[in-house]
Length: 411
Image (cartoon, rainbow, N blue to C red; front, side, top):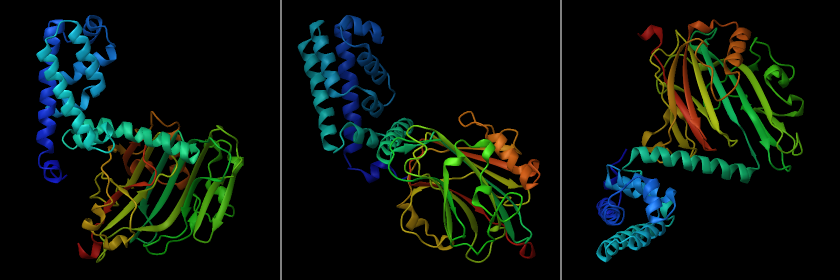
């Protein structure tokens, strides 16, 4: 990550620290003179006759170890002004009150420089405060979830997607099974069709693959054969929209009604979809998820058989989809402008399905176990990895990369 001080106004970091120190110093003095240095929020609130939520936030900020953290945690200037007025009534000196007001003015001056006020200032402070960035990120993503749910008129309780990879009949390629479930998709408006799930029938920049099959290896006569009725709800409301290169599972504009949850589980197999070994100019495979429905949580699992991609380690890159280029000639410098720094939990789950149950999404282990049974693949041979994102931002993609080993003849 670039040094924030090198990419911001040369004096900004100094001013932030100076203002934070000024707020801490002057309000420490104010409390010393008005409530004998008492810092417990409830007692300060009682003595100053002000709201304990305000005194609680002030107390947390004054205890912060870093001056920038003081600014991040402290109440807004208006709230600080309430504290000053109350402290004055309790006997704080005119000098102490004047110093505190000057600190507030400096704080307000910083806020006025940012078009978005406190939100923008907190975003700037998070450049120096990683913990603050994580807290602000969750609040921002939750706000985005609520806003997008309102704008689009629909949302989901959660989504689960898994990719299961093992060598194909062609030893140079891998078969890939995709298993997924959209939980509790609800529409809040009756207006237009809602796509719950879909996929492309072709491989895009990859080499041509065989047609999508059921997990048992059959070409489906009806796309509904790719659905899993026993783990779905209101499956009878689903409509299939097909084109030569893609397929969608949708709900019509008036189905199934407002605030009626729909859960849709699906699974399919693509023979020979991924390369198993590297070749000149093609050194990695990849798996990208692009959430489109606002959802509370998204879980992505990867299952790799023990004889594919031995050098894989959990990794994920989040990016706003920008100018498309061929994946085998991607430029790190070109892509950097599209990347967005978001928190994604990453973990290794051992082998098989014993540890893949989710506390947030129901029947994940049952779904994947069913997939392995229908595939006829030995689950205990597969290494399992998980990526989890709370309130994933729609249209931000999540990509994990698989380094390809050299083909056997060149080892």
